[in-house]
Image (tube, rainbow over all chains, first blue to last red; front, side, top):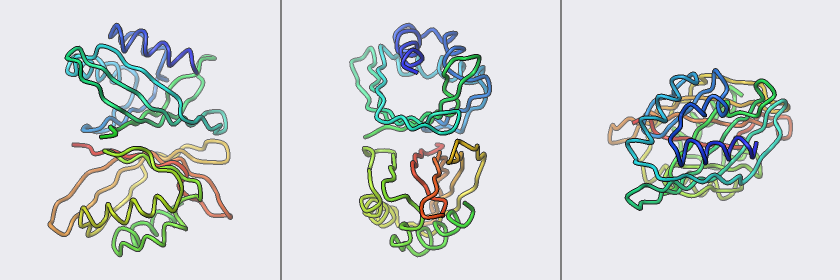
Length: 117
Length: 117
């Protein structure tokens, strides 16, 4: 799980390399972003992140686990994130991710977040 | 689970009876509301809902399950909600709830949501 989160920080947050999302989300993952309807499927999710990263002009992102609770063959994680933009803005985000294993790798299966302020 | 959601709709949404939340949230539940930090513990959650219902002047709320996935001794639910205010405003909300059993009753253990628009 730490590996997956580090991949998101290094590849998606810092480099906007959305191809790395293949290793981060399950094929039929769902994301529930604030201000938009739910998005289903990894390909659609890649499209969302490409647009969102560009729109926010993201410089970097951090992820920190607040709690990870075993849930059958998955894990329910509560976490906090900080997104920093190239304009120097910083956003505090909190999230819940339902993790599942796919091809022996821990991935995000359900991902919902919102802003703290 | 349906019973728990119906209780929320009938008691909390329509009557703002936050005492009913004893039967809806686990004792050490966590909520992650948009625009505020995470809130831990049922008593604190009751305080949040009392304030939020009053601030929004909620008339009614509906909840609909989009997907419920077994997760060990719990369930991960994706759902959608509509909140209607006495001023006639209507808000589309989506959420993820991690359900657990407490005293033989299905309750919300982790509850996060955001707005669609």
